[in-house]
Structure formats: structure tokens, C-alpha cells
Image 1 (cartoon, one colour):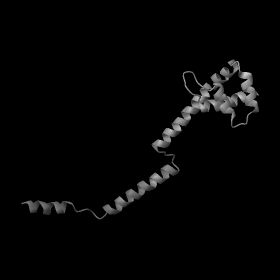
Image 2: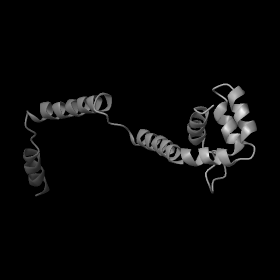
Image 3: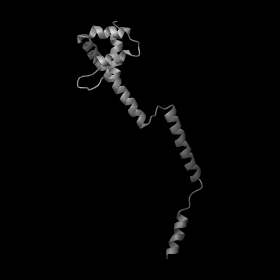
Length: 128
């Protein structure tokens, strides 16, 4: 009785001859679609997406808080000395001077925002 079931099962598992080329075509098509999507289609991985999101968020915060930073620099009693130091410094060290002065530290933050310091330095040095 058991052997009769196996004979019937053997006949029901006959795979058509067109299945192998169809599966090969599907696999090659999926690989080609992935290559085209990641190369030219603008697809990104989750890690790249999170990195881009963090960068854009930091840039948005810096853009929004730049006027605050400029006003903070104007209200600082030591602003004249810091501005003289900014004027004498090279382009690469200016944002560090803004960070050290405390102008790029948003309210409630423990440390300065680097993007805000760069943006604020650019805005402040326009008037120098």
C-alpha cells in the first residue's frame, strides 16, 4: 500500500522542461535589476540612508540655528577679541574658534555643533 503511494507521488513531481530556463531567467533578471537599481536607479542600502538622513538633519539644524549663533556672538562681551582672532586665523581653524567661544553650542547642549560652527563662522566672516 505504501509503495503505491510513492509511485503516484513520483508521477506528480514531474517538472516541466520549461521550468529550468524560466527560473534561470528570473534569477538573471533579478540580478540585473539590482545592479541597474543600485547603479543608476538611486537605490541605497539602509545604512547609507541613515547616514544621509543624519547628515541632512545636522545641516538643517545648523541652517536653522545660524541666526541664533550670530546674535550670540554680537551679545558676547569678548566678541571683539574673538573676531580679531577669527580675522587672523586660517580658514580651516575658524570654526574651531567659534566652537571655543561657545557661540555654536545650542541651548541645552553640552558640546558645540560642528556644522553650526562652520555655518556661523561663514556668516560672521562675511562682515569682517
